[in-house]
Length: 253
Image 1 (tube, rainbow, N blue to C red):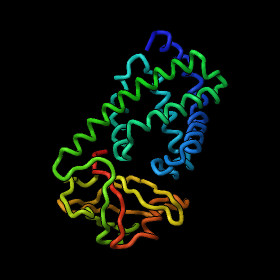
Image 2: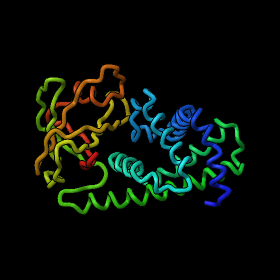
Image 3: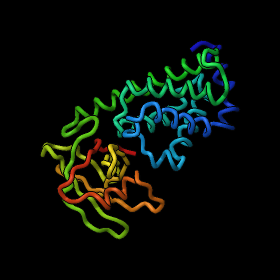
C-alpha cells in the first residue's frame, strides 16, 4: 500500500465508528443477494440477529485503525482464520467478498466507485486477504497432515442421542469408518445440517463435550428466539440416530 492509500483508509475511521454496522449490514444483504450460494456458508441466524454484521464492523474498524501495522492484529487474525477454517472458507470466496465490500463502501458512503478512496480500500482489502489466505492455507495443511485429520467438510453419522439437563448430547462417528482427529473437550467443531423443506444448508459451531479415536460428542441446546435456520433446533427436532451431518475438524478456541 502507498502512503496515500494508508491516509485515505485512516480518513474513514470516524465514519466507520459511526456507521460501521450500517455498512456491514448493507454489505451482507448485497453479497447474499448477488451470491445466494453463500447462504450455505454464512449462518443466517447470525445475519438476522445482527451478530455477524457487528463483528465484521468491529474487525473492519480495527483494521483501518491499525492499517500501518497489521501485526498489531495478530490475535484477531488468529481468531478470524480459525473461524474461517471451521467453515471451510476458500480463497476464491475472498474475491466475492471484496467486490461486494468495495461496492458497499461506495454505495453507503456515496463515494464514486472509481474514486481514490475505493482504490485505497481495495489495496487494503487485498493486503488483508493475502494475510488471511496464507494463514488459512497453513491451517488446512496442518489439519490434513495429522493422523485422522482432514480439511473442509466430512460426513459423520449420528450413532447416539441422549438427553441432558438442558438439551441433548449427540454422538457421531465418521461415515467412512476411517480414523478421526484426536481432540480434547472444549475444542469446537462446526456442524452443517440441511434446512428442512429448503435447498439450503446451515453451519454452527459446537463445543465438544467428549472425544475418542472413533467418535465425538457435543451438546445441543434449544434456541429460544428460534428461526427456520436455527441449527440447534433443526438438530433437536429433525435429526435421529443413523442420520448424517457434516463436520469440520476440531480446533481450539
